[in-house]
Length: 457
Image (cartoon, rainbow, N blue to C red; front, side):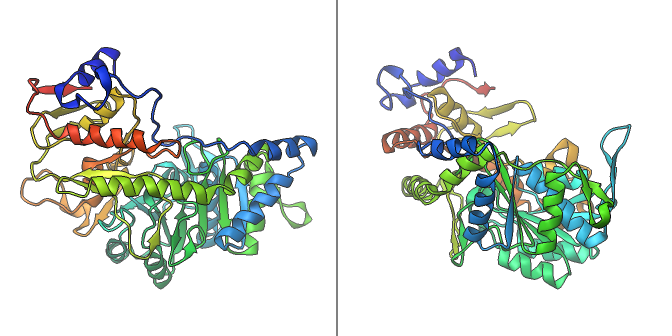
């Protein structure tokens, strides 16, 4: 957005009174940013003193595994690295070992998942699906539940009826709000499938009092710069048996993995977390409960103010205790907003009594507050449109075009994307700043004063 366009939004009469003299936030209000407490330096200095011996990394792995109740953990450079190892471990456990080779026409050929389907949640970041493709697998996208925005167990059952040969399932806990993983795990066991639990966004969240990350056969954490605790980068693989731990450690620490008698057992990645980053994450873990409490208070304030007929917050299941990483709203007014998005631009029409997600996004940005559209369903990405998606209505391939005008398919993932917006949820945001964010959102729903037909971005 240009400065001229932002100024034009700020000067609209509907926003008068929120800031004096058509002003904006003194400092940018972030969606989610790193929170530094000052005691990180102690662990960094220890790493320097011991000449990067790996003590921080070893301690972090033990502390994290004990925290979630996993057998062991492996600290890695990134969440994507953790996803790569989890998918490779699961694939080789199911289908046996296979070497990967890069094809001259681009992409990977062969791999432990070559020609195999994998069930993946349709409402999640694309990194884990990228790991499936790297092993030669074919993702099949599973729609989510309106109850938690996570993989719907009922849809998963439908998917297994169509694809009985699938032996690997990947689900996530969207925005730090736990899904129905106990039910998902039960279904996987009934069908002899392994489960990868992508807990990248949900460190510290609980289901029935147990922390997420160790429910699945393999778990993934991400400590990127916008996560609830961060080392500026970093990830973690959680495993539940000794053999998987030893194998993944070998892959993560050696370019050429050698087994007993020195025989070659596959290519490694040398992707372990640096001892400095591990020290920062160790320090952050000590403040995790503080961060969760602050994020929860932010969510509750949004929920209390938005408890009406035209805005809803992302739902919390009765047995779940989220870490409230990102608070999300949906536009639910009885008057349907008019908005169209493509991969590069969006357009919305001004209507009194309703607002579209991207209209609110623009308004917040004009005043210096960061928000974000909800996850775009993976099945709608151009790179993934050739893969199947399963909803309560069955397979996308069975229904043909969604625009045939006769039947509207059930597609919760698309509904969350179309109506959803991630609101500023930064630990550093104070109550006054949040109240002004809320005032801006409310003002977007009143537009009697507007004289423009359309707004382009």
